Length: 277
Image (cartoon, rainbow, N blue to C red; front, side, top):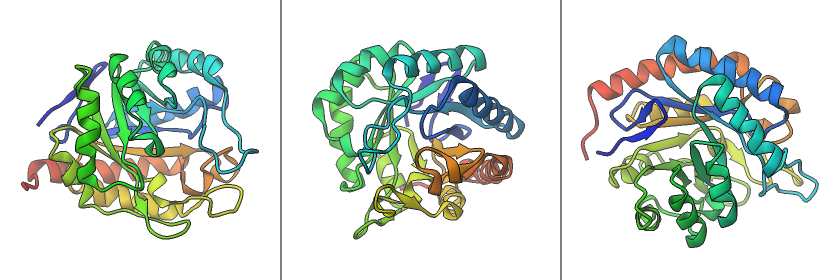
């Protein structure tokens, strides 16, 4: 079983839970610092490792009019500032090969969006950047198909890989989360992550944007963490109903301390008696 070193953190399926959390997209430096500081404090209170997450560009919005974020230049400057001022590792999405080396200068983890998880050139560029690489399993893939994704990143000599479950397509505008995918992907030896907020999204469900059922995000997070996984991915906002993207499936920032306390209690039980497949 492999662990991935990310800054001062060690992420592994047999290590204390890592929480990857932040707003869906960057809105401003002050806003990101506020959320990051509160999440860092909440994670420290329950013994969870913390990685800040935000996207400088949401390139896969449902509608052309959807808000996309600060853009790569201002966004990466903001993420680098967050990493320095909060002293936490930072994760962001990349969407094209030429973004990877540049983004790796500002953040610790490059995330490959689910829709792009089979794009060979993007995976190779991310691996070659030297940053840790978190690949979200496509909504169209079986969990065992991720072996081929791992092979592509490993071919660059980079073995700092995380694999994320975010649901699979289940008819129009619907996703379903199959918890069997987590131990299946863990067979690769790499840490697995449960994206509990995107897994409750309804892609395109509101016509010009995605809908979601945020009340079920903690449910999926609990189920996944009880299996014994490396990390959980949770998007959060102080006012989800007015967030610029993914608001319907984001957990309210005020609710995160209670959610995290429960997850860490489950994590301790799971890690004390791991499932063997």
